[in-house]
Image 1: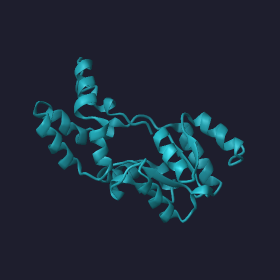
Image 2: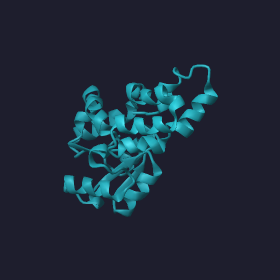
Image 3: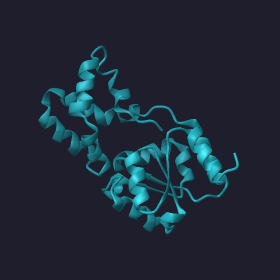
Length: 190
């Protein structure tokens, strides 16, 4: 799925695009958000930031209440491929940077998540991609050697980290690109 805090905040900063840009690039930054993905609870992380930017306290608090609105559309082609791989009996595992306290409800509302045998969630493990430790957690949990695994991710830094550990990798840019790759490797037929 596509995720972007801008989706949730654009209505809150209606008619103030420059302030929105400032807010997302200076206040609620990706670096700050990553603390959620590393297991810091929303409440604690929000209070920490509100002390630094009290003038934005309500907007910072909205990061929690507006969380679901940060998600865009499901990437249908990717979901189709996930189903196809599942139907071919490939062992599918997830490795995601995601806040622990938000993961359960996300999983419950998106049934494609049930296709994974297991999902390693950074917020539960307190470590995020591309840190090699989270890949090692995946390997320990699955029991499948890295060389026999295909790691697919949309972030180049995560791909590079996986390659260093011996994973086969594919940098996801589109479902069509992934389909072409899977066909070329004879993982799927079409």
